[in-house]
Length: 285
Ligand SMILES: C[S@@+](CC[C@H](N)C(=O)[O-])C[C@H]1O[C@@H](n2cnc3c(N)ncnc32)[C@H](O)[C@@H]1O
Image (cartoon, protein in one colour):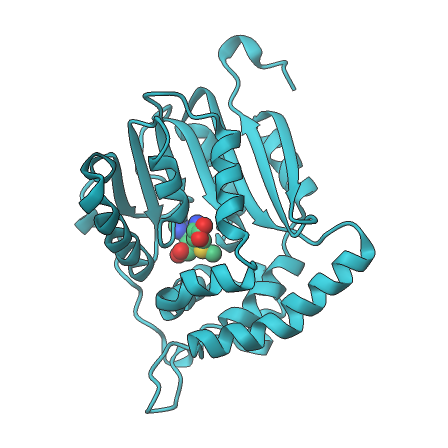
């Protein structure tokens, strides 16, 4: 597809821009905005501004604040997707490309990372180019595109695996995105989703709520020198998003079968898996 035809970074409206002349970062989220963040009409624009602002420190914050578990979660997503030699993979909301690259190390013949934030994809490309210096074939398997997970620029039945890690919570309309994933998957294809959840066991949930709601917003904001409100957004967006059971129900409603969830690291993260049925498997729920 022609990348130049894709929408470019939206211009920030006056209310999105910090009034501090020494810090022109977009102000993506205020406390008032966070009250109804998933319902906001401008959620996508604010999410994009936020990821543009934190892109450079995104990987470091991921490692530190997941206590170095985030790459293990991505490996579990890849394992669950059961990639076969020759499969084609689409990693939606690929960000800086960690899951895209994990898929590129399987037998997949082609892996596309798609995201709507240019700053995140630029970093994914740099990371991929660096790996390709030692493994040129890996570089040839991976391609990045700017695009919207809710309106995928692909024909139906184009991929064997579609993935989205820590992205479905951020899209404006998660159901629309999941319908798109179903459309572009081939029959027998797998959708794998990684997303944060609130652990079921109360003492673990209280500790996690304190960590995510109080500790992490401060330390992550310091690490990234962020003024976009990104690390206040994270716990608020997890707490007000559907839980992993509801996500599984949604996947089933869209048409996925054999929907399964696996809690990771005491349930702070959940890996969800669903299959697009082959024509003779539509009853296989
Ligand atoms: C938390 S990051 C996850 C990045 C990556 N998947 C990972 O595992 O680290 C969420 C990403 O979702 C992207 N995103 C949010 N909504 C999107 C949409 N509608 N279409 C494409 N990308 C989207 C953001 O730009 C951001 O890069």
